[in-house]
Length: 180
Length: 389
Image (tube, one colour):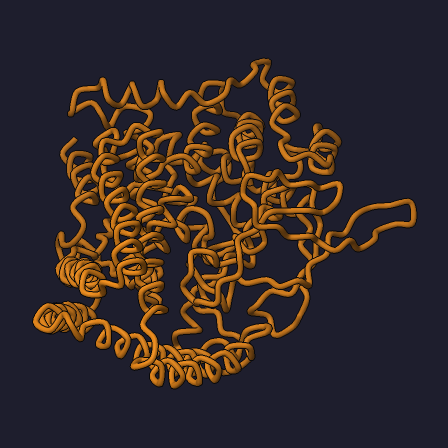
C-alpha cells in the first residue's frame, strides 16, 4: 500500500467517524441523512461505472452493458433523491439487508472455521448471531412499530466498523521481503 | 487440476524423473498440499498465516476487496495457481494502466516466472519441488485466466461450447452453466457449475477460472469460449493436450531439480521418459470422468511398485504441532511453509518489480533491510543460519 493510499484510507476513516457523530447528534432526522447518503452513493456509483467503462470495460467482451447500466443507475439516483421525503421503507429494507447478509456470512464462516478446528470461530459466530438477531429486532422495531431511530444507530455501528477497518488498513504492514 | 493430477500424476512424473517412491510421495503430497494449506488451517496450527497457498470458499466470501484484500488474494492465487505468463505483455489495443496491470497477470505456461519458480526449488526440499510442480501444472490448466479478481479479464459469457467426439467426428455442445455449488458437474450433458455473474470488477466471483467453473480442472474436456480480454476472438482449450504437456514438462523440471538436466529451459518437455506409458497417459486424459485418481494411482503402482496412499492431513498437522519450536521447520509442513513463503515472496517481488502493485509491495532485503510482514522473517533466518553453517 502506497503512502497516498494510506493517507486516503485514514482520511476516509475520519470522514466516516464524523458522519457517525452527525447521525448520533440528530438521530430523528437520521434516516433522511442516510437516504441522502444512499442517493449520493448512487450518483457516485453511476459515475464510477461510467469511468470503469471508459477505462476498463470497453476492452471487455460485452462491456458495453456497463455504459447502459451507468446511465440507468444515474437515473435511479435522481429518482431515489426525489423519494427521500416520500418513503423511507426502502431505506430500512436496504439497512436490514446489509445486517442480514453480513451476519449470515459470519455464521457460515465460523461454522467452517469450527469444522477445520480453528480457534477463532467463536468470536465470528457470536458476531454473526448478533447481526442476525439485530436484523430481526430491527425488522420488528422498524417495520412493525415504525421506530426509525434504532435503524440509524444500527447503521452507525456498520459505519463504525467500516471506519475501524480503514484505520487498520492505513497502518497495516504490507511489504513482502524478497531475500535472494 | 484436482488431486488426481496434482498428487498422483505428479507422483508418476517424479518416479519417471528418477526419484524414489518416498521422495516422489513427498513431492506429490506437497503438490496437493498447495490446494489444502489455508489460513484457517495455519491459524489452527499457530503457523505463519502468510504461508497460505489457497483460500477456502468461505474465506473468499469473507475477504475484503479493498486494495489490501485484493493484494492478499492476488499474492496467493497468482503465486501458486495462476502464474502470470508475461509481466510485460501489452494488449493490441491502447488501454489504461489499471487494465494493463490486470492483463499482465493472465496465466500462461513457459513464462520467465516458471523458470524462476523451478530454479527457486533447486537444491531445496522435496516440498519446494512439489510446490513448483503444482505451479507448473496449473500454468497449463489455468492458462488464459488471471489470479486476481477481474471481470474484464476472467469473465466468460454464454458463448461456451464443449467439443466432444461423436461418430461424425468432433461436434459442439453448448455448455450449460449452473450456479448450485452442491450440484455435481454432469459431463454427459455438458452441465457444469460456475460462479454467478456479478457486475463488479473486483468481485470474488471473477477470481481465476470461477466463471468457467471447473472446466479447466478436468483433464478430458476440450472446449471453446470467448474470453473477456481477447477482443471477441475465440479460444479453443484442449485440456488433454495441455495436461500431457504439463506432465512431460514436470518430468523435465524434476530431472533438473534432481541434477540430471543441467538447466531448465522453457518450452522443453521430456516426452522420451513418458513414451513407455504414453498410451496409458492418453487413455487417462481422454476418459470422461470427474476424478481420475484411481487411474493415476494404478499407473503410479505400475511405475514404482508402490500404491500411493491418500494424503493424511491429520498426521501432517499432528507432526507439526507435536514438534518442538526449533524443530518445526524440519517437519513436512514446516518445510512446505518455507517453500510457500519463498515462492510467494519471489512472485510478489517480480510482479512489483514490473511496476504492477496488484500483488502488493515488495522490497529486496539486500538493499532495504527487513520491513513489512513479519512471517517472512523466517526466510531471512534460514538464509542466515545456512550462511553460518
